[in-house]
Amino acid sequence: MRSYDGQFSDNRPLKRTREEKVRLLAELKETIRTLKPHTSPELRTSIAGKIKELEADLAAPPPPPRERRMPSHQQDQFGSGPRPPRRPRPPREF
Image (cartoon, rainbow, N blue to C red; front, side, top):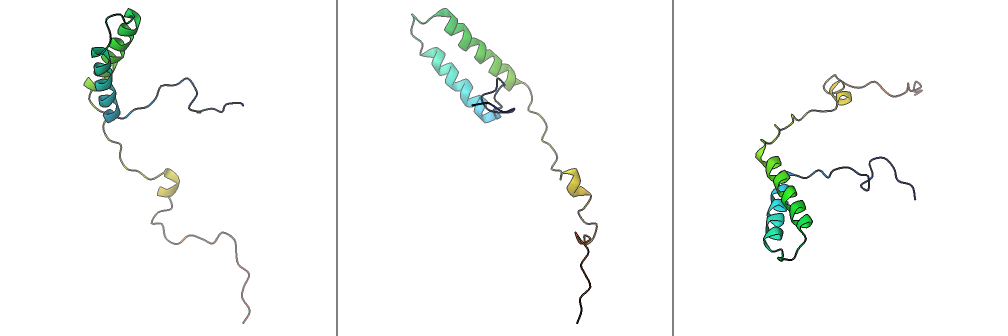
């Protein structure tokens, strides 16, 4: 089966909300605390690197909220009065 552009299986980072990042950071800290002594050093350094990355990401100020805007194609039409008919109607006969 062929993939399409933008599919979740593409190699791209996941976008997480701030709350998800905080929860993931707590889970990773708990995981590294409960590791057995015979756990491989590579796994420990990998988890520690992810913890440092998340802490740095959370230390940065959150981005400012976006303004609520309408799409540009709706801004032109809103409030400009009645729209013209899509096609001209034939005159009625009474």
